[in-house]
Image (cartoon, rainbow, N blue to C red):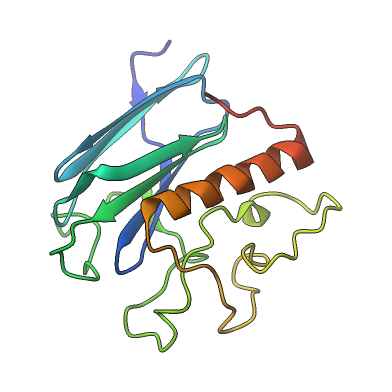
Amino acid sequence: MSATVLLPEVLWAQTDKLIYLTVKVADLKKEETNFLPSSVKFLGSTEDKTYGFELDLYDEYDVEGSRKSFTAQRIFLVLKKRDDAQEYWPRLQKAGKKPTYLKIDFSRWRDEDDEDTKEVDSGLMDFGNDMPDMGGDYSDEDVSEEEGEGEEGEALPNYKTVDEAMEHIKTESDKLTEATGEKTAE
């Protein structure tokens, strides 16, 4: 394994109750994610590379209520905001400067002043954006079209709890595994 720790691509989005982080690392063999009250630490490895990052978050979150799920291609983190927390954070990190590896997940992003914010939320496991057309039918309403091509105002699930979001992760992960033969990392 390499001694150099590389930075993976990290996508993020939020709702009034949850923060979604997707860490993209192909062929991940091993990973360790630490949920701390005001930060998230990730360290993972493939056969020949090591990836890692630490994010000092804008506000504290509910560590016990947060969850993760992963496949060989991605790590999905769902952080539950504290009940007394500000509904929408103005940014993900405490510091104002955004790291180059951190990007907004526009396929899941909703502004707090959107009219339909309470009805529309993240389709957390939209694998369609990263997969070529495999001939499968991915027309379910909880799986959006190609990034930026979904219908405006399209209703997506509004997860009230981390468990609901994680159940959706598992379902969509199983669909992807079945459609592509990708092995799910345990």
